[in-house]
Length: 117
Image (cartoon, rainbow, N blue to C red; front, side, top):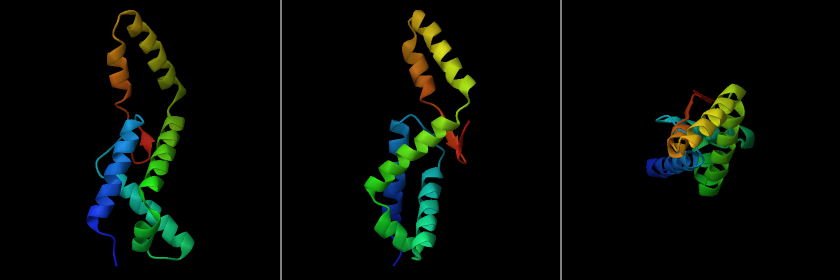
C-alpha cells in the first residue's frame, strides 16, 4: 500500500516551511525530491519498499531533523566571501538605518539541486 499523496505533500510542505524558517528557501518540487530520495536511501538500507519507508520512517520529527541537516549543509557550502560580503554590507547598512533590508535580502537564499545560488 503506497502512502497517500496528501501525506507526502504534508511532509514536503513541512520540509519547505522548516527550511524557510531557518533561512533557506527550497525551489518548487525540491522538498518532494528530497523526501523521495530519503525514502530510497532508507528502503535500500533496510531492504524495504520506498512506500513503506515513507509511511513508516519519515514522520514530522524526522522531517524537522532533515531540514536542520539540509540547512546546515547549505550554509556550510556557502562561499566565505559571500558571508563576509553580507556581514560588511550589513554593517554599512546598519549605519544608514537600513538593517531590515539586509535581513530580508539574506533570507532569500535558494537551494537549487543541492547547493546555494
